[in-house]
Length: 463
Image (cartoon, rainbow, N blue to C red):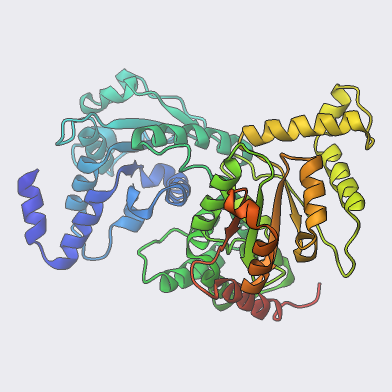
């Protein structure tokens, strides 16, 4: 193999790039074009959404014009940790022009890929080979396979059937296997639901529209080599790029009203990952009476998305928004609103305990216990107050006294608002019961997102 590496390094630059790209990919997708090209396309797009682009080798996107494809394929298999062998209805029976079964032909590339996959890596580590059965086929038996591929009969296979919920459930099984081998932790998967949430709104785009958006994103992030254009792959890129990515939608698409949910969801994710991490760690602390103050300037970009992005569970944290409008309601009125919200949240538990849907002491005590339990489980429930509510210290203290384990989130426009609240809660800040989160990666990020959002909204026709 070293001789091959040396040859690759001495090759012309465009050929060298192709070989070195292949050598970095951990997951190799093997498939037969006459048998399962559509399934392979779909799987590659999903995997590229769940991993970095460099992690997945797929011939259609990883072999470029001018590359020496035999060498690229050999290097990709040799250096992979995982080989996914997609097996469809014609995988075993596909024949050459002279009627010979392709799997019995030593020049067949699928046979050669899988023959190499069955051999040890250069570091002597065993390679994980997973047969993926599509179209409801059964795993081929040992007698069905040529001698170099008989080892496949011993490999545990995974079915990838149908679409929708069936496919998603089976794909998750595959993803867990890959994560275990690649040592991807649960924490690294913590925000997958964010990508899924954005992706479901991007599903309304046609394939050509998604290609156009991917092209614009590539120009935006410095000429990334990413070719993935599935809804989920785009969602992941939007999440990483932040507010500036919104402009790519306006440049790539002709908008109509049906696309407004796409824009609405994307503009909610301007909060940086670092700020979300800080908020998550703050609110995971077990002591009660936590307040988080989020500095912002654009009032329509509510902190609800801050809570969502800070989530470290399979589902976003629950949050209720209380707006004061022009007049600040009394503390008693706000607590009644929160009480009603919590009763709805825990309605099933209330019924199971035989408690009434009423604001009374025994119900309040039950809600306090449930809030404490959720906080200890790392999935606290939050209430968002606007700036007017946050300025009312009596209101804040009343909420804290009634529901100590309820988290409070406040959006404060501008630095002056932060300073005003810091003066009110100086003791809390000194004792680390209050945190100030500035979610912008750089000054003006929020305004960038807002400007892009409003600029595109103006182009929408009426509903």
